[in-house]
Length: 331
Image (cartoon, rainbow, N blue to C red; front, side):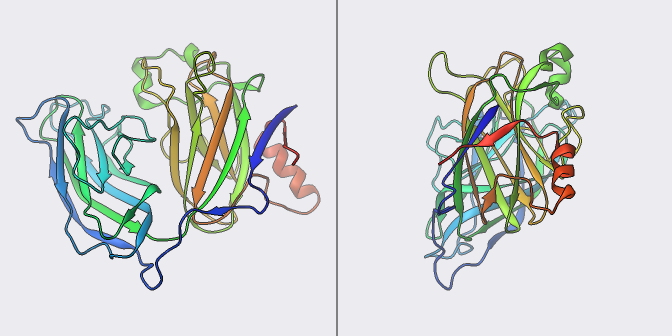
């Protein structure tokens, strides 16, 4: 029987910051537009300082939401991402690197996920470390491919000061049930269907006690011989391993096709109280499995369980979810 360890269940959650009294209000920057210059090349880092006076001195900002519209230039492949966006609370040093996969980024408070389809995009997440209201804020975009003239318009950035809670968890996909996982749009041309088959996975039910932003991060790199390429996702209402795209929220978090990566994986979403969710930890290919450690930060408490319901309703929820066999660690 699989074992899932949930850490910190008593007393429950740990507050990672406290909001400043009287200043706990969201801060929103007026929408703006940026365009990749026509004379720039691959790897060009561009930066702009956002207007002063929007963040409140004395406040510590803990969560973010960014929305924007993306229009590729006429020569770009519309399914190919062009850039990585990041927010920093200091001007980026020459040679600064922002990683393509979501997760920790060098010198970046927020790294936005590269996008594969044009249109209206949105990201949310937790700030770690927090952004101080007394600091300047910079919007940075790194052009990865030599496409020019790409425009990101109506960029809207909102930071909030809500107190965040954190909880850690861990598990091991070795010997777990297997599935044919979902595919990232970039994989259609790179990976054959056989590369995403027979992959072990863990499906962990959870629910939250407050509406708002929650961010999950897992680590699968424990040193030579104990690292593997992880992929994570979140599902709403129920998880069906035979239909990997059904009820999956937003984008995936994994490595680019043909580019093995053992880095941490991070996903953030605005979740709702009273909804059953499932956290999915799996691998990129059939040989990617093993131990993982995770942390979730959010505006409320996260409970790793099926939402309690009386009698047969609880049993029906378990059956519907395709819930992986597991039990919680004993204290």
